[in-house]
Image (cartoon, rainbow, N blue to C red; front, top):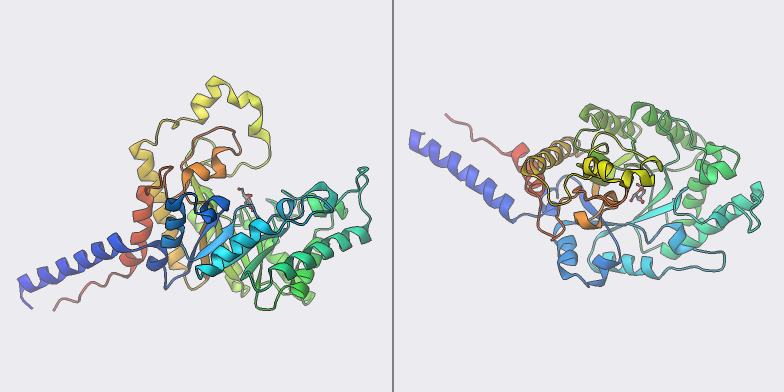
Length: 389
Ligand code: GLA
C-alpha cells in the first residue's frame, strides 16, 4: 500500500467517524450497549412543548416517571386512587415502543403519612402495616401489569455504612429493615406479571460499605426464595465525585451476584459543595444559606455557565460514559434524571433557588458540549485503525 493510499484510508475513517457523530442520537450511539433512558413528567408527554417531546423520542428508548408513579401521587389519601397521570405516561411509552420503567413502590419519601400512622397520629400495628403494604402493592402492580416493563420495588433503604435506614416503613416496623425488604419484594413478586423485572434502587450505591449492605440484602432475599432482578445505581453525581474506581467496583460486585445493573438517575452537579459529594437531608435548606454572601458562593453561575466549566462538565460526562461503555455487558440501562437543566431537581435541592447545569440539554433545549462528548464514546472506543502493511 502506498503512502497516499494510507493517508486516504485514515482520512476516510476520520470522516466516517465525524459523520456518524453528527447524525447519531444517544439511543443509536449506544444501541449495541444498553438502553438510553430519561426521566419525564406530564410536560414532555402532553406535547405542550414539542421540542421536549421530540428530543425524548429522538434520543431515548426508555422512560422513567419522575414523579407520577410515587405513592403520594397514586394514593394521596386513604380514599383516593389516582392512576391518570401514570396511565398517560405508560401509554406514551407503549405508543412509541419505549421501555417503560415504573418508580417506585416502597420508599420513605413522597409517601403519605397515613401509610404508617392512624389519623390520630398513633402508629399502625404490625398487622395493619403488612396489610397496608400488601394492599398498595397488589392494587398498583395489578393496575400496571401489561403496561410497564420493570419496577423499582424498594428505594433507598440502605445507609452510608451499609445499615438499614430507620425511616418511613422501616421506622414504622420498629427498625426491621430486613422485614421491609422481604415484604416489598415478596408482594411485588406475587402481584406483578412474571416478566416484569424487579429492582432495588439507591443513591451512593457505589460507596463500598453501602455496596456491602445492598449485596447482603440481596443474599438475604434469595436465601428466603425471593426474586430480585437488578440494582439501580442512581447516579446523582458531581464534577468531582465519585471516584471512577468506586463506580467500576460497584458494577462488578452487583453483576457478580447475577444482577442486572442500571445507572438510573444520572445528573452531574457543577455547583459549589454539591459537585464534591451528594448532600442529603435538610441541612442546606436553612434560610440562612439564602443570604447574599452565601448565595454568591453557592450559586455562582446564575447568568450562564463559564466555558471552562462547560468543558469540565463535558469531560466528566465522557469519563462516566467511558466506564458505562466498558461495562456494557453488565449494564442494562443508563437513565438521565431529566431532559434539560431547567427542569432538574438540582436547582432546588439541597440548596433552594440555584441555577444548576446537570443534564445533557440546556434550558433552551440546545445540547451541552457533553452531548457530543457522550455520543463520541462508542465510536472512539471501537474505531478500527486499518492495519498498515
Ligand atoms: C431520589 C428518587 C427520585 C427523585 C430524586 C430527586 O433519587 O429516587 O425519584 O425523587 O431523589 O429528584
